[in-house]
Amino acid sequence: MYGLPIQAAAVEADRFAPCADIAEFPELADSLCLTTSVPLRHESPDGTSIELSVRRFPATEPASRRGEIWLVAGGPGEPGASFHPLLPTFRQAFPHYDLVLPDHRGTGGSERLCPKQESLDSPDGVALAGEEWGPCIGALYADTDRTSAFTITQAAHDLSTLLTRHRGDGEVLLYSVSYGTQLALRMLQAAPPALDGLILDGLVPPENEAKWDLSHRTAVVDEVGRAFLGEAQAMAYQRLLDTAAPEAAWRSHVPGGDLRRFFGALLNFPTLRARIPSIVDELSGEDDAELRATVADLQTMMEEMTRHPLSPPSLPLVMLISASENNERRDLSRETVEAEAEAALFTSPLPGFLVDSPVPRYERDEWFGSTPASLPRTLVIHGTLDPNTPYAGARAHAEGLAEAGPLTFSTVHRGAHLLAYVAPTCFIEVASAFVEGTLVPERCTEPGQEP
Image (cartoon, rainbow, N blue to C red; front, side):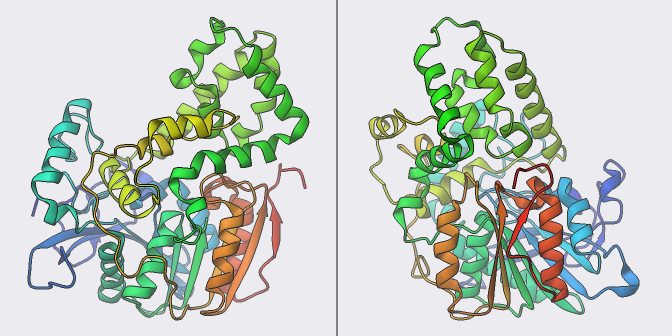
């Protein structure tokens, strides 16, 4: 045991009590926290244990409370705290339900892959400072038995255990996003708990479809970016890339000096994505005002999303699960990554991170690539311009899942990733209709997005 997580400090284990951080973060004032122990390996319940952290928010309309909705974060590596900025949206969508935010093993206040280097009192908090990477990677290799227990399947057993052990009265539904949808579906295979409903926001593609794995993320991002721009604007952007002088002054304002990667990042934020054509036009005339403003606004948004000290994702966990389960090309080379990105207008850093991954990969288990035998009633809500989990991949996955239970697919036109954040009006309309049992719109367009 490596110490209690920050939000559960001084809280008795296995019992919800007021969180320790509520004075510092007023928006968390009514939350309750607990820590609980689970096996490091669920097939060995009497062996080593680890601690998990959970936060609960009571329903905003307690007199008409119906149950609870567990909110499963993405990543891999995102903690429950990544949902804090989205609480107003979730409360509007689910006013009659408690909101329960578990931290996956390896994230947030739960036990970490590198407990010393990812501790709150380390040089960069739960994130890793430069000098901490070496000792962290070294620790992963020094105890590969422990490292190889931080898998999707073990995390799926964690979630099932938490849902069974700490569920409240009434209905129990589960919302998940991105990697969280992969985790939720793995749980429904390996350790299915009783659920009254499932919401999949940004559904991952089928695991056994290599063309959509992380090593092909630049192709996915480029396709979405070109679809957003349209042919004429894409040609204007290509001209800028082809003709801009290497010494152009605006290059110094581009994060990392890579305009294609920066624009790829903007695709996740529709309000900033909308500026790409005007940035291209201005840069073609050597005007970088819109570029500089967008860089500043993106930084502000990212700081707001990571305001809580437990908000940063666990990069060691991201690397471990991504390299072990979500990369079909184990021999991916830097040359291949660069060749595949050469003609792209929009790129992703993810393929490059998979080259010579420094973590000790584990082997996929028997659940990889399979489908749950049965599903509770399920909603898939997905954006057509999602640069992280491609719309075509979500459609393909949903078709297979529909054979396991009642499934409704709702499309958000021009929606990006994490719809509860980037398309809150559509998300509230669609998700609330689903939980209320009323007609779910097949298609929705967020206000401000062209039809």
